[in-house]
Amino acid sequence: MSTLNRKKITITDIYCYPVKSCAGFPLAEAKITNTGIQYDREWVVVDDHGKFVAQRGNKSNGIGIKSMCQIKTQIDDTHLILTAQNMETLKIPLDNTSNHGKNYVVKIWNSEGTGTDQGVAAAKWLSKFLSRELPGNYKLLRMHERSNRTADLGIAQIAFPDGFPLTIAAKSSLLDLNKKMIRKIPMNRFRPNIVIGGCKAYEEDTFLRMQIKNMEFTNKKLCPRCVMITIDQSTMFQDNEPLTTLASYRKTTEGVLFGINVNHSNLNKGIIKIGDELIIIEKTQKFKIT
Image (cartoon, rainbow, N blue to C red):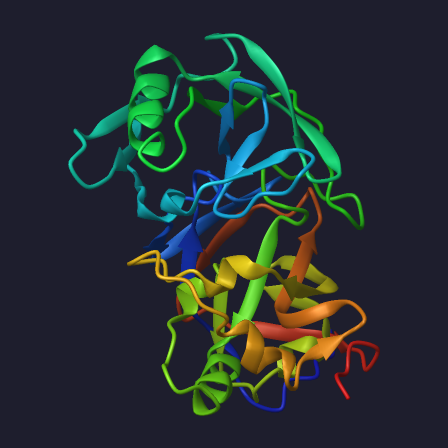
């Protein structure tokens, strides 16, 4: 197979975000499943009315609670683990799947998925912590094994991300942005799944078809960014950056853009690791920013 790489592009970082809008954690390697990185956005928090909770919300079906970013996540062999300041550690068994709890249909922006209630202990923990910012009753749901939610474009299956199974960003793109900023920001503002090195700033915009090992990925859409990137993931401090700076040179009719939304075939399964090469099979100019 012919490729378009002029120089070697490699994976420098991999991240998993098990609970939608909570903090993620780095991985040395990750299993690619039919919904993307294993466990990524497989859980979602909802309120009493079944509306999903995220660091940002909207008027129709999302509840905005910034302190979601203060909930740290981890996965071990048997549990999803949640920790937060002045809270006891919460452990949710990974085998707590479709045979446990009530099932709920959850609307994430424009599409619906099915989640299974993860129990009273998780609900009490989340309600206690999140009620510090917005009083309410909250529960944790996990994607039902027969949930059938598809990506915004294409046929890829997804759990509870906004619209795509994977987001890819280049280290050089963040470096270029930070050169224009007074205060530098880390990559976690953009919550990518895969970070790559070895390409020019924003060159990822033009990557149409990519391959990692024997798995193929397709750039479906540049990632338009919302106010969530203005929230410091460590302190919850919020101002207008980096949206203001990005908008000065990365704004289009699609929005303020950073990173790419990527689909993969549901048949793509395997292990990706830091250091793996990202091979460019096909490029496009249709995403070029002017």
